[in-house]
Length: 376
View (cartoon, rainbow, N blue to C red):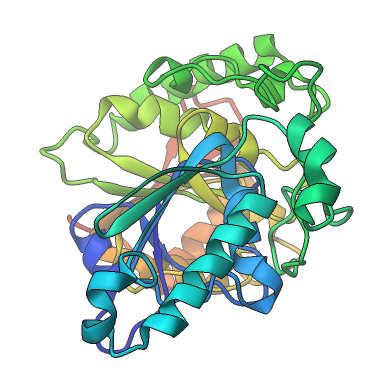
């Protein structure tokens, strides 16, 4: 996932999306990044110009929160390699040396291990669990472990000066939260968050069944939209991703999927999606999505309008979809037939080329599809 602030002179996120790369607008400020804990195998920052040890170290603690156990943090740019670069950066050696010392000290307090510093970059590794870290906390003067909100809470939740605790383990060689399969097996292996029973009613059996259902649904979608058509649908969004079944079924196509988990739902499944090797974010669809206009080729909406029926108007959600959809993009809206009929009326106001069709369940099932193909 590429993340950058909105930039008036160099729209980095827009450039990345137009190249067909996963990206979204974001900034390290006062609230957590919209991702669950233990999401990323590696974090990378080049010339970020961020005071990592400033503001109580909360920014590096946020990176620690979203890194997986054993994950890597790669930093290039100030203050790394300051002895050779301070003149070009127009800063004093004393200032840069002090900044690096503060960064190194904070990394030690987080129990990170410095792997290497070579030329313009440095690499640290997060521990696989917190057994040793908890024992050495007083000696290292480490920040306290966070109590609330939970480590996966990340929608307008404030960054605190504390370490997000890893799930407890019995032995030092264990990986907190459970070890992940290597890619590509990771995509369809039962995620540790499912095996641990973190979400009521979600088991290994229901996980496998969900995969089978979405494989059938994607095959049905092919009747209406040529998903395999010459790489046309590269940037894809799933507005209600569940446990990532749609994205997993789409993996046979040359596409990537932004898996969005609405914050209004009872179950937070975004951590499961990341454990499958997929990417995504939290979202409230009564608000605008953190991206530029015309950045997605295909948008998939499963049950979104039923979820938000009493929260905001249909036309407001459709207008946001219209904003981020490319001019010749496509939309698949899956919902109850009564809801689909209402959405169809509003879609006509936007002059979308849409039609109501049956799902793979046939003509007598109450769930229908509204298929929009604006390339026609």
